Amino acid sequence: MNSPLVSIIVAAKNAERFLSQALDSIFAQSYQNFEVLLINGGSTDRTLEIGKLYKNIQIIEQQNKGIANAYNLGISNAKGELVAFLSSDDIWKPNKLAVQVSFLINHPEIALTTAHAEFFLEAESQIPAGFRKDLLIGSHPAHIMETLVTRKEVFKQVGLFNEGFFISEDIDWFARAKDLQIPFALMPETLLSKRVHDKNTSLKDKTNKDLLLALRKSIERKKNS
Image 1 (cartoon, one colour):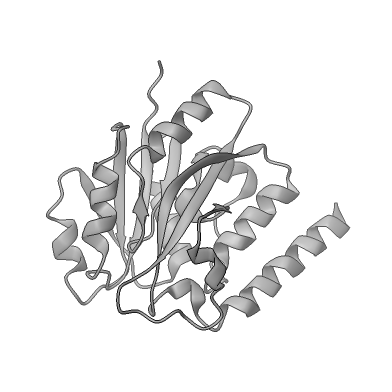
Image 2: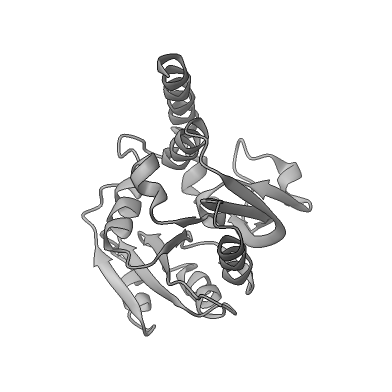
């Protein structure tokens, strides 16, 4: 069976608290044909030191230009036929890549896949304001970066991430893919453990503003199509 190379992009800024757990979950994958691109966003803690402890990691320095720029930098350096993403504070299940890569191999008509995720509250952390507490029970469909495995060529169709977004660059990208009717599939398996803690960037105040902007842009695209 074909075993395509997967480029895994990990954006990290001052991520020493959880980075080792995230990277360990990558190297524990049952599917092993991958490269890891660690995008270091000007960290001042031990992020860079931790990254250098792992073999076969390409560390790319980024001048603190935000998460969308980090993703785009990773994509531009990716050598793989497939591209995946993992946040520095989340954890993949060991069969994550195997499930999604196998699906893409067996379904060439599908361009991108996502999966279910379970959310867990970090010990001694408070539930962040605005977080839905029901997400901490069971697993849920998650169309987010950490579950995404996509063919790299999709970025030629959808484009890269909009660097004008502070947080919701992923929502904007998924909306563009949906508006273009890019074929996708949701895996029934739970393949991601997403950590909830008081420093979650995705729960910052600006998220709602960026979300509304992403939705507004989608509506505009549909009107102009």
